[in-house]
Amino acid sequence: MTDQVAYGVAALAIAVAFFAGWHMYRRLEFSNPLFYAVAVLEVVLVVVLAGGSIVLGRTSRDVDGVLFVSYLVSMVAIPPAAVLWGIAEKSRWGTGVVVVAMLSIAVLAVRVLDIWKGTYA
Amino acid sequence: MPERSDTSHGFGRALVAVYAVFALAAAARSIFQLATKVESDTVVPYVLSAFAGIVYVLATWALAHNLQGLALITIGTELVGVLVVGVLSLVDGDLFPDETVWSDFGRGYGFIPLVLPFVGLWWLHRTGDTREG
Image 1 (cartoon, helix red, strand yellow):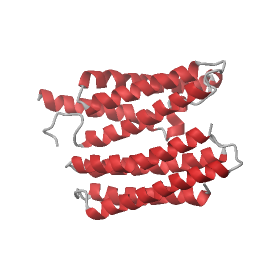
Image 2 (cartoon, rainbow over the protein chains, first blue to last red):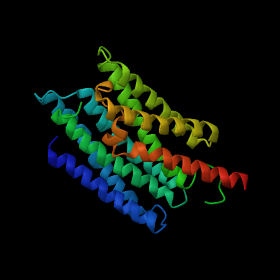
Image 3 (cartoon, each protein chain N blue to C red):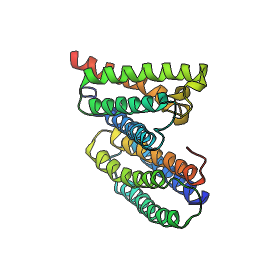
């Protein structure tokens, strides 16, 4: 888990958040491009979860493993829930849920980096 | 959307999402703290974390199921909690050696814990009005 990975994930999540926010602002329905954008993020998060678990086993750092992995699992779990919820809500706030979810992932990504570095208790 | 008096639809859906995130964050933090740091001399922050977690979970559940009474109680508790803990943590930092969601008015969470109850109460007021009118 390097700075690039964490900030890359955060940047991608924020980009998707803006895309969803644009949908919300324009009162657009949950579109296919938005779905694909979330799907791409989800694939990245699954890769980060797998990669993170592997490097966790190899690192000599004093990382709180349970906390670290639980954050990564949370990040993987959020996008599917947001998509289901976002499609279910037919008003503009359906994509608002996606905005909330994506910003949460960005925050979690930065927190995970702190956990990895041991600067977060 | 305006004709709906349900707290779980429209803007409420996004609000429930934010509450769900905080319910998860506060509850998970509490469980983690209770599991790993329970030997510590000061139990105040851990009890407080657990309490905050329960409040957020109940508030999320109440908003999602349009339980306006429970939502009012839990969001009111949340407002009092973040204000009291915020003031106390500034006045006497030793009281809360470990961070909670509400420490320093929720600074560790972008002050969202401070703003959220106001938004929640506004939303309850709004949905309550449409139901009566």
